[in-house]
Length: 91
Image (cartoon, rainbow, N blue to C red; front, side, top):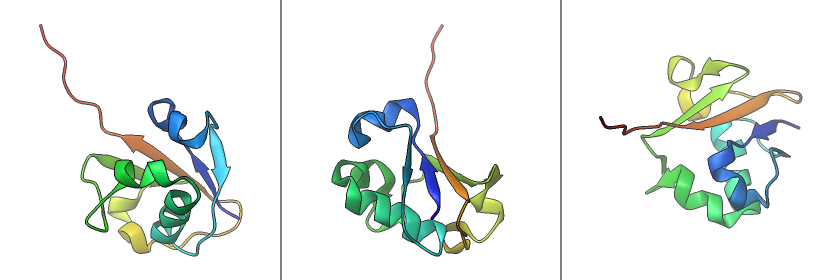
């Protein structure tokens, strides 16, 4: 079963858990499974059924934008990493 690494900023939605197992054969299915198991994650990951544009997702350290995006296949033992983009900063 694939594992999902949850960043600190989103761990409140998973009860403080850093990594969770999620079902699915593609990155999209894994993320939707995560959102189903932890409903508060859905609004942070998806907008109108699509991945939010400020959410970066990696499969085993490879950006899914350069693979098959949400259709990227996953296997048992793979790690899906969620990295919300950070913005801001002022002087």
